[in-house]
Each structure stands twice: as C-alpha cells, then as structure tokens.
Amino acid sequence: MTIEFTTLGVLIGMALAIFLIIKQVTPAYSLILGALVGGVIGSGDLALTVTTMISGSQSMIPSVLRIMTSGILAGCLIKTGAAEKIAEVIVTKMGQTKAIMAVALATMLICSVGVFIDISVITVAPIALAIGKKAGYNKPSLLLAMIGGGKAGNIISPNPNTIAVSEGFKLDLTALIIRNMIPAIVALLITILLATILTKKQGTLVDEKDLEKGDQKNLPSFLQAILGPLTVVMLLSLRPIFSVVIDPLIALPTGGIICTLVCGQLKQLKSFAEFGLGKVIGVCILLIGTGTIAGVIKASSLQADVIHLLAMTNMPAFILAPISGILMGAATASTTAGATIAAQTFSVPLLDAGIPAVSAGAMIHAGATVLDSLPHGSFFHATGGATNMTIKERMQLIPYEALVGLTSTLVATVLYMLFTH
Image (cartoon, rainbow, N blue to C red; front, side):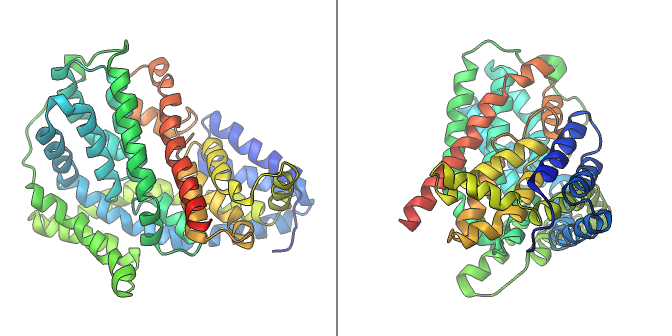
C-alpha cells in the first residue's frame, strides 16, 4: 500500500483515541475521531483521510457479518440456560475441593464454545460465588479463576476477536483455533495455580448478599446443552479433516438453532436471536470504528518505522506479532479491538518477513489478552460488578490477569520458534 500518512500523525491520533477512551467517551467514536485527527495531521489532506477511514471500515465488513451471526449462537446458549448448565455440571461434578479448577475450566469451556468472555464470567459468577462461600474462598481468587479461564477459552473460540484475526490474515478460523490450543491449556494451568495462591491471601470473602436469589429455572440436560456447541465444532472441523468448507457465518447460527431445537425452545429462536444481536451489536460498531484507525495506520509509515526499530535493536521480525497484540490490546482495553488493529496493521509486514500466517495470527491473538482488562475498558468493570468487588480490589487482580495472558503469548511464540526452526 502507498504510504500516505506520517508515523507522528498516526501516533497522535492513537494517543487521542486512548485519551478519549480513558475519559469514558464511546470507544467507537474515540477511534473514529483519533483516526480523523491522526490522518489530517499525518497528511494534511482531509479528503484523503476520510477516504482511507471508509476503506478501513469496509475491510471490517466480513468480520462484522460473521460476528453478527455468532450472536445467534451466544443468545441461544444463554437464553436456553445451556451455558449455565455446562458451568453448573462442571463445578458440581468436580466439587468444593477442586472449586478453583472447576470454575476456571467452566469459564474456559463456555467461552471457547462461542460465548463472549465477559458474558462467560457473568454466567459462571453466581455458581462460583455459591461454591466459593461454602468452601471459604475469597472473591479475588474466584474472579481470577473465571477471568483466566475466560482468557484461555477466548483464544480458542469462534468469538469476535478470533474471527477478526482470521480475517486479517485470511486464515481458516479452525486453523487459528487449533494453533492456540496448547497456549490455552498452559494459560488454564497458570490460572489455577495463581488463583489457588490467592485463596491463601487476604481478600473479601463471599457474603450472603453476593449470592443471587430468585426463582429456580428449569435448565436443559447437559447433553442438550452441549449439542449446539458440538455442532459448531463438527461443522468447522470439516474443512481441515475433509476439505469441506463450512463458513463460520453458517456454522455459528446453525449451532444456535440446534441448541434451541434440542432444548425444546425452537419457538423462542426469534427472541433469542434478538437477544444475541443485542450482545454483539456493540462489538460490531466497535469494529467499524476500529477499521477507521486501522485503515489510517495501514496506509502510514508506522509499519516501516517499527520494523526499522526492530532491526536497529537486532530483534527478530516475529517479535512484532506478540508485541503489537500486547500494545494494541492495552491501548484499547479490548481483546477484539486490539487484535483487530494489530492484525490489520501488521499482517502484511509479518507475512513479507516470512512469518507463517497462522503463527503470526496466534501470537497477535494471544498477545491481545495480556493487558485487555485495563480500567478504561468495559471488561474490567463488567467482571468486577459480577462479583461485587471494589475498584481497588479489582485493580489488584490486573497483574495476575496479565501474567495469564503473557503465559499464553510466550507459549504461542515458543511454538512458532519450534515449528519454524
């Protein structure tokens, strides 16, 4: 692509976007304004800036369409009670003595089958708090177990972030999921270790007021609950196994339809789909805003300058993948936005450097989970609210969360080095 914008202009635009996000301005608008200001400063041409922003947003449409259809699966899993049933069975079967492991595993599984990470934590939280009260665990240890398990599941899920990275590198979604399987398992193990350590430290214990009260609802059986996600897995697996291509745009809603069918709630599909759309519409809008600044960055000299900096410091080119994921995830406080910007911006230079697409995508994706839970993002507040934690106590978990994300990133990077050397 022809270089149209200066690195300085792009950096100013990104800084403005970050500042506005921290000030609680809607992230999509923050990114659009940052792209506009950065483009104008970097080129002095308003018309060129707007054209590039629109082009960047247009490149997001395939991801947006797939994410919109993923809302059907997420809505059906949540509204039928399938997600809650999966969590309940795992936690109940493993018992109080393995509560931390059960909570982490339950959140990982729910997130990995297509429920967004914040919703996964919110879904598991009531069950985790109930068993945590019986076992005498503090809330920070339980929340870390859920967040860490969610991070592990998020890099092997058909979620918006995975879809965005696969689109950025023109990758098969299943290939990207499979590549991060080992990093996800290691991240889960680190989560269990860190959360277990936290159970022995001081922290607010689960109180009676933290437990949800209300009418008991009839949940589906575990077999009914798992059939929808299994359908998605089988459909997506047809490509690597039999070379039969079933696009996620088809596989994800099909899993949702199967879920409602086996749970005997097919008549509710319309309302479940509307609920799911409500959950993903914010992500879709965010991606459109993300596309504007990603378009400006791609058309700037930032890529060349970063690569030049790496060369000056004698750092290998592949380091660009995890570092870009980490930095963009921190800047946006969002796995989806961070992974999208990093993939859209650096896919070409990484591929030109000879880094295999699946390896580069895996490293960026894992890297975006390191600092994605900073306080200027919604995930920080949604997860803290799910366990009624104070801002101060929630802040104290950030280093532990970052360590979980850093673990998966390091493993993904080591795997690249092993596969290519």
